[in-house]
Length: 245
Image 1 (spheres, helix red, strand yellow):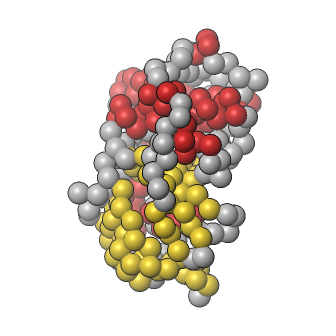
Image 2 (spheres, rainbow, N blue to C red):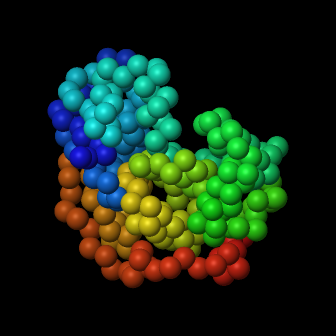
Image 3 (cartoon, helix red, strand yellow):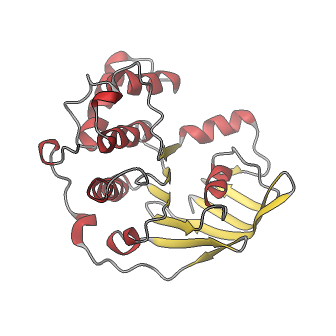
């Protein structure tokens, strides 16, 4: 069954129409993009998936279990534990180390055993290529490293779906390229669906996926991007090879 299944969904905020008649689906392990101009409804659509913006009309099902037009607080909490969310502003706790940032999330999501938390933190830091950075505080890391920690935080609970809102927006092209490789690699290895907002349309060809465009209060499916670079399937380089300023 689809991870996301929206059919004829209308999205309003304070009686203002944001998107109408939205119909799309996302399958397990699928990588998809949402593109469009500023204010076209991209971020608002993403917010309906984790329950920050309500659905007005239509059928909006997530994980074939949660109907977003009728979801209640307790079910919403369960849903969010199955999601990972990445924003372009890092939102890391600046007074804590990387390890403490990640441990805080695990404790808040029910991980009681300290040794199990420590092992999971080790796993995700290795997955994002920063196994030796756990003792650092956010200000001691580059922007690209901070974003990789944000991704590590998002995948701590092995989500079935990762929502990413402009995750490369504040990064230079080289670092953004690494982040895109990382997201595609994690999606493939973990069979995790990814729905990503981007303004950078060069990613659509270099890192192929399903593409949707928000325009004129509608969501339309675009022709699938063609891969022009082999990097999306490459193995990630080791930490020592990708230090960024």
